[in-house]
Image (cartoon, rainbow, N blue to C red; front, side):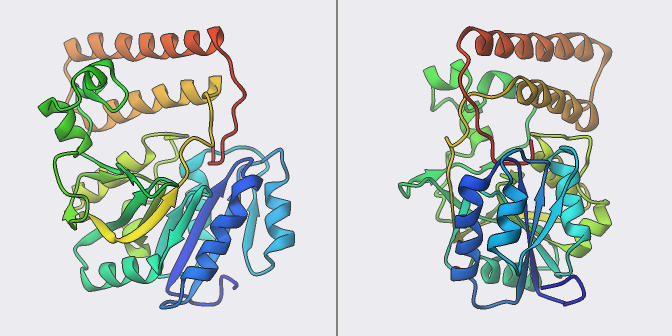
Length: 298
């Protein structure tokens, strides 16, 4: 489909060295989508494994945008949306697979609820188990009570971690949430235009948190829709690259600086803590380096 062809849903897939997985993602969209018209836009962030060429040769109806350099995930999503024509946009990671007519389910919800700015499916691991994909907005306590923090591992049912990770509700229930994983989410094009797109300052990580925060700030809702299901393969990526570690912590600071109310004292504490956390992660990688394969726009 071409940009001139008006469709209901545009699927934007940002890739980086994703040749191994992107085909099954595209095939799942083709097999599972029946209730809406759609197009697929693949934005390849200067892959070195010929991902873009592979998609162009194997899927002639898919629009492929070849970036000359890695412009980052948010900027690539924006370019994908600019090249698309759908009234609704599905941001989908290449390591995802649709289970059922997800595009129809989410676009129908957004069409019927104009006060919703984002609708997101339930994410599942490959074995069908639940993948926690919605959260409360991060705050100063998040560093101590995040998913991978020592306190959460030692005391998993503590109230702070449960609130942030949203483990205290039945994930079969549709509900309003603060933010959802950017691995798979849908938004109306009109909301994208209203917000000015995704913030390209978030090269990688926290871009989904920022987008959902701005949706809330625009007095719109973020909805978790568990009847729509998507398999997401976590673990294809192994240990993070040096750049990914640095970009993660830059994004932490970017979100903190942009959205949290700050004092001089909080700056004096928070900035060194983020810096030390980054240095610790880099040291761990140096001590035990492993090969890394990353399939997003990193």
